[in-house]
Length: 320
Image (tube, rainbow, N blue to C red; front, side):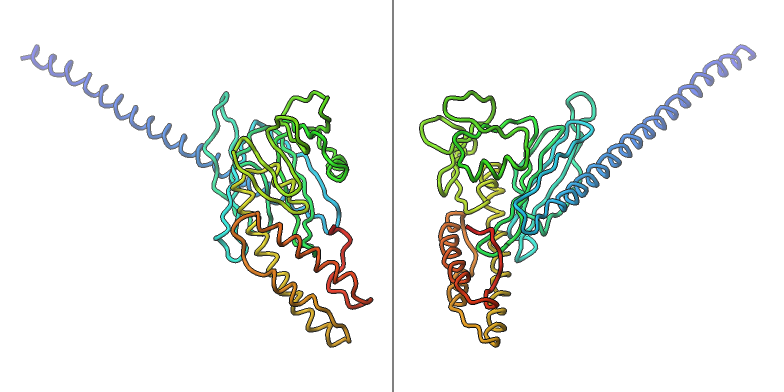
């Protein structure tokens, strides 16, 4: 009988240990799982906050009536910036969304944070930028009155070789001191994305008087004024969406100026800008319609400049 009791105890002891090990292992698994979820959630919170911070960093780029500004933005690690655009959200102005992630271990990136809305800015770039440092610069857009500033963001590690750029573009960009935009001619060598302003060279991006053709995307877009920079540096989808958003902003401002005409008419001011301005209202389907709008803007600007002192509808010296 004693022998039997001893055997029962010797069998019961290992089961107690096994149970303790299994229970402890399960608790440890839960702890590791919870810690992983916490770290992942914390990362996404940080990434979302970073995306929001980027938008606030674009604020100082608002130029007033200046010719443009530029900033260098550096991250602690190699990072990804995701940008998308939807002209139908937040009517009538549309909306952009920006999100962010960075490298965690080796070349692995964390899951990107939540998208943050951009309602009152027009940011032109590729859909995805991957770099440790980016350049952001802005240019004012006049059609013919000031519509808004446009913001362009590009990766710092990517060179852009501008072949035979006109004096206006050269002066405009050289003043921003962007280190990765290099001005060269047909006989010069330059390592980077080739951007050509003349025929004769097999370039990745070709810029003519009214259009930009990007071989990477196999598409062409049309531009007016400073939108040439958005056309060069952004994906066609982002560009076309922002052009539609800008036209909506233009329509809102044009209606304000139409109301202003009624006010200045009471001050013995007369002008035939009204019908011309009213004829430009309405959405656009593609950027090619910018060309007609730009020509109309030239006529409106000419009429406005001929108005007698105190009767001009708007004042600026930037539209050409």
